[in-house]
Amino acid sequence: MARKPRPDLYYCEVATTLEVIGGRWKAVLLFHLIDGTKRFGELRRKLPSATVRMITLQLRELEHDGIVRRTVYAKVPPKVEYSLTEFGRTLIPVLVAMRDWGRAEQATIVAKRQMQDASRAVLCREQAVSVLEDAKALTVAGARSSR
Image (cartoon, rainbow, N blue to C red; front, top):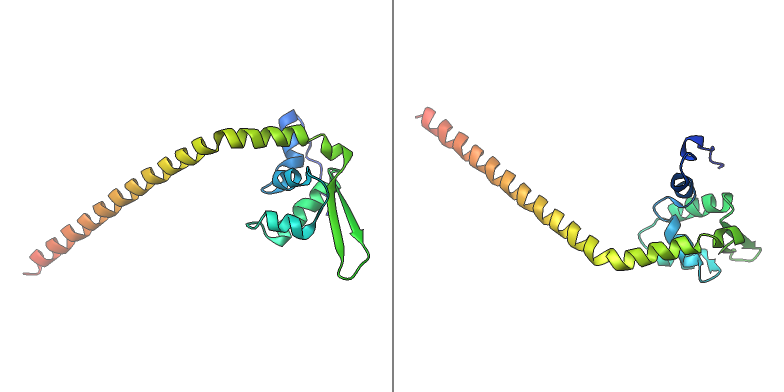
């Protein structure tokens, strides 16, 4: 499952980086591999919202790009371990910076999203009241015309 090169993304260094570590779970998987080698099951438990298929696909892409090393042991049951390659370890400062930013800004992001959700709820409630008032007016008008 080799990905086709995307020369249109290499005009910008940030786009190049995101081509490798972009994806819903890639950066999180890489962050958990900073500590050392992990078995697939360990990674899966650290990402309970991710499907097994998605974790597998993203690990394969990272392996294809030379970021992650996959080691398969011929055992029953099969044992598969993942670790960062030397090339993958060059991403540690990026991942740590992402963690630090998330840690510093998490409360702000949560508060902003809660405010947006509350605004949407108020708007939805206002729209619902308006629809109900319109429906009531139509019902009253219909009742008057049938008299």
